[in-house]
Length: 328
Length: 297
Image (cartoon, rainbow over all chains, first blue to last red):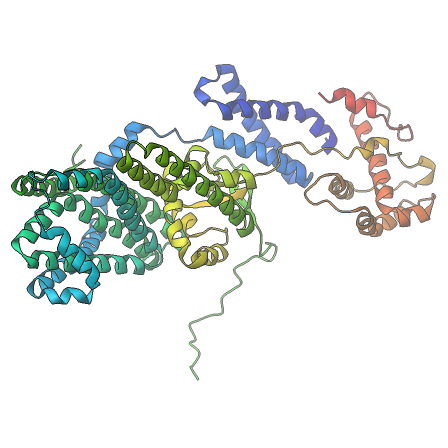
């Protein structure tokens, strides 16, 4: 059998397979009639065989490319992954993510320490001597903060102030999502460059936030009450999520540095999927945090209730991360 | 001077001599032993696609801004919040979303004819699409510096995001069946009186076939003069071996045409030897394109 005869004999089948592929690609494979499915499976094997014949006899590049294309398309359809479902997403957001995080708890512990320790230390240092805040924060910003938390913002008697804040809530929700989730994702992505950027961002954010908190709390009891009742609830999701995003970045960086017997590529790939799951979970937490920060935290509610809800949310976050999806 | 450590033997060459050193062709073998080959996409196609996508993203943002402006008449706070969320989604979600729903393509990638696939050639999964596009933030540090370095070093044109996701970007191949050189049906076989008993090997005929198909099919097209020049050596040698008694000037100046005639002559002869109902000595008959057309669907 020579090339011309072979092409003549097989060509109708290739045409059939191509037409079948066009149908399979445009609609879900499970809606095809049974006869077509039989044909599809048979033709995929036959065309694969034809490709092998043409390769081994070196019957021309173009012909090879054409059949290669058909086989690739067929193979992709035959082995394509089932489409993602909303239920799977929900299962990941509630149970899968804490599981993934616990599997890599060492990175989480490291990310947590790199973020929360500098935060607490710089908080304590600045609260003891508020003038030290100017070392990390520009003085205009300090004045603005001073003014913001100085007065009794949420006094229900002063309608104007409350309404002014309420009008801004949607803006702030949008701002928190764009800003905070963006920072967390950068904190994750930059980790692939040896983890240096992640460590820097964690330390930097920890120190600045700590200094800011210490400065505000040291001004007056009024300041402290306004500030703490504002941040306590959303802080549980937000600060923890930053540490988690950092943990995801550290995973990427570490996969490069300590890769054992793996090649660089394999190391990246193995950790890459796990780390993005962790980072994605952190992003979801930050969206929740943005909602709380924009709609709950600034609302005119007595600060005692805010403290109680805030404490409950801290307990909830860590209990969820530690316990969700255990057993079974 | 540092003393040479005796236990370090010189490393043998890692690359087999027959393997080309630089290639954009990626061969993947499936568990069923089917080999599939992919042509990797380089920086130029990919950055063009990126540029197009940037324009599309700018257009999307403008659209969101226009919507927010319209809604802003009645709900000022809400519309600005909406715009900020839209901004975030276009900034971080555009690539991942399109690569997810279109199985590895964005608008720019579609226009450039490239696609992201898993490293074994499978369609892109949702998580992989997310990984490679979140890590884009690290790739884009300093005018996409890490991206280009990684593409050069990875050997598969993978940027950092591709490494973490285990994906590669490939060119989509042409879909149409390559045409047989039409010319073959009109070309006259050599006169039987002009040639001796020598029969070229199957391999020689295949070589001619490949050369001729390069005249008609697009990817590696060669011009006329070059074709004749390339053919000259083989044509002269074949003519010698066949003790050709025709016009040698033609063989020399239109070598490719001569090779085509040789091809047609012996291909026909073989075909007719193959089929039992045809007598073997039918070589000097005029070519019969009707037979071929009749069988083509």
